[in-house]
Amino acid sequence: MPASNAPAPLNPDGSRRTFMKQAGGILGLALAPPFISQAERLTALSKKLEGVSTINLNVNGTLRSIRAEPRVTLLDALREYLDLTGSKKGCDHGQCGACTVLVDGRRVNSCLTLAVMSQGKEITTIEGLAKGDELHPMQAAFLKHDGFQCGYCTPGQIMSAVACVNEGHAGSEAEVREWMSGNICRCSAYPNITAAILDAKGQMGKG
Image 1 (tube, rainbow, N blue to C red):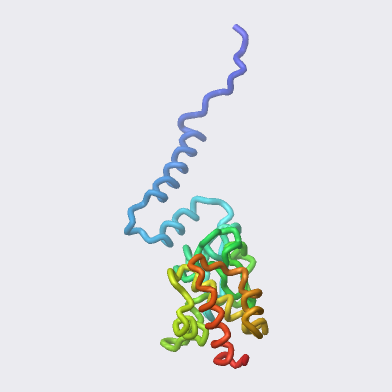
Image 2 (cartoon, rainbow, N blue to C red; image 1 turned 45 degrees about the vertical axis):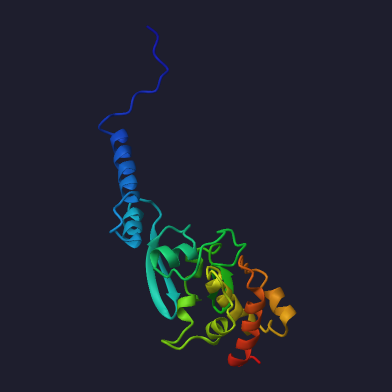
């Protein structure tokens, strides 16, 4: 009989078994009971993936280290690895501004920034603005002027607002609206947000 062109079957004790073990392990981690924290689940999963390395991040004045793949975004590093959930994942495409954080004082969309690119830089999140029980002037102004409704976009709005003032782009209501246009509020609290920024400017010594 002519030789068959069909590929030889996988060795049941070799590569096929290895593949099934790896697939089963990853699936098991994904379906792990809820009492296992997200960080523990991600740490265990990372051990099964190639390319995992240590990433050192200076967040809110504290050096933090995570084990993650190079493709992990700064937003996911903050939320899923460091449990800093103030920065929100909205569109995940850099269009809504809910994930805004400060990197070396400049506002960035953390969903579009790789965590590994932020090594050696100072990262400030909404959790790092207040000094103990003393709110940052921008946080206090948002409360005073009701600059939020559902609150989902608020952390990103506040971080962007702080940068807007520090950049010198809060000279008028029209200027504030222009330089805050990258942050979307679906509840349409824009008038109150603008009023809060102009109010906070003086408290931040930028008046």
